[in-house]
Length: 287
Image (tube, rainbow, N blue to C red; front, top):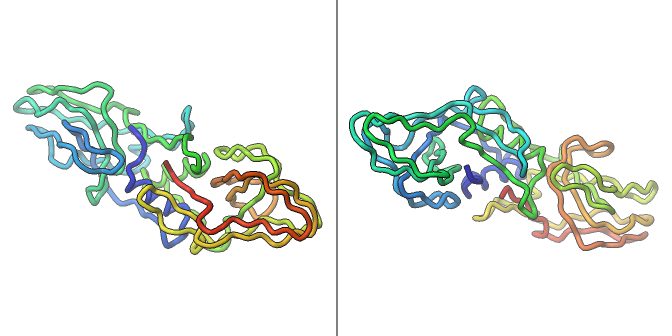
């Protein structure tokens, strides 16, 4: 399947970035809906649902647990989860209204969360069985977004949104999220590499961020940004030219959970300088 709908993208980024205020709890089951005219899978609007004997309007229920969904795994372009369960339908008394052109996942409130066109439209006749085979539903968060989240968060949020028994609690307050500055940018997806500002005795340290107050609500495009200016303490020596910042779990030392990053035009910092990110200048998005 394609990427998440706007509704799902907003819920995902709010869960990651806005602490307890934005926390999302998965409820289910969800439903797999089939379409003969595809909706706008991003906006979750429009489309014509399949009708026919043996097909239940609204779609077929699928329980959102680890029994039905594989754990998030590395994909060639990011992270993905795939279905274990195999939804199937039999046209029991007549031909269906098809051909079937697309499928989507609808949440417990009947909002379209994920969907895509089928590679090949399918016509289902009387007595035929249509099924979505194992791994046919691939829910993917890719690496194409300029301000996307890192791979660690991609995997955690995919698991959180597909399995009630793989929940993820994102940083909720003033601990568990810190901003690190870099003179050589790391890989913004894996967190690998890069050179962090490390000059001792110059007043540099990772800056604690309160995730409950630091970010606004996701907009219609699924983007959140910083609500106020982010300012480090004034340097007491040379920090070098800062080219990137990253949101990470650890206040110091090795980074095990790299959340997201941002690049900058190089800013040279010497004694007395203060590194700042203006309000609204750090955008974070899922898509």
